[in-house]
Image (cartoon, rainbow, N blue to C red; front, side, top):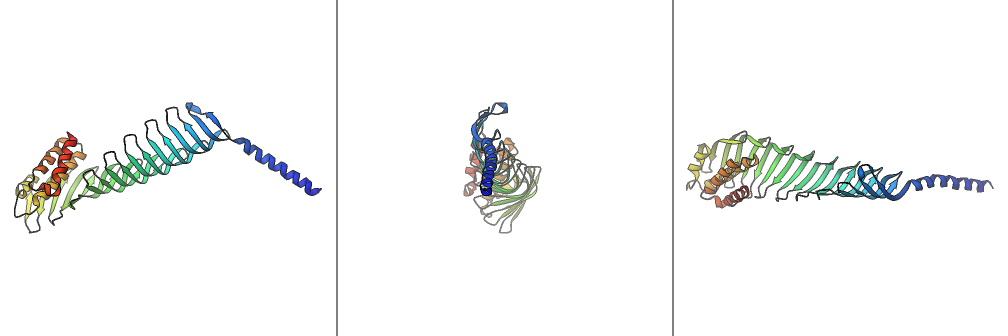
Length: 295
């Protein structure tokens, strides 16, 4: 008899514990403040579980919710056509995810509170690629940037701009080491060419100054860029020097382009094309492509 009473009491207790929870967890359609609408699992009148949120502006989110907020895995299509697929936390893109921009850019990596932050890779619509650290939606920290011409910048960025020590490596195995300040080269840069020659070039606030070319045969040429061009172009005693200088001229043009000084950039791209053996390093093609893009 006592056992029967205890059994009935336990069943009644379980009923009163389970039923409220069952009633509070349902599936339905609700209209949220601001005109957004939701279809899916509900708990205590809020989205909780799997569902679809249709925003008033046309954006749509499909995925998981916790206590009314996007949380866990979800996919959102934004009003401009951009899409995000990945992890959410407290209503924000947070964790690992993929963001495809309407303009054609593609980002794969980490997010913090709705911003690209941590490690990630951005493939631009132009074909250029940045791989590295991000902060508040911009390249920030160590990373590499591969340009359309095949060259690669490896170094430090700050708030989306090159800032600190870095190097640029071309497919011809030529390289430039330099220091950038707010996306402009400052101080002395050093070029190391595939044939063993080297060139140092001084910069001030993104503008080139004096240079010194040192060939493997011991020949040294000092002076302005114009002087270096004159003494290396078609110089039979300095095998490959004119092609090397073409790389330097192209590099200067690219730095001016980064500063949005197209007039100066075009001038140096044209100079790169005039070097006698520039085609040995495909500089002519690279410079021509830049000029066509800027016209």
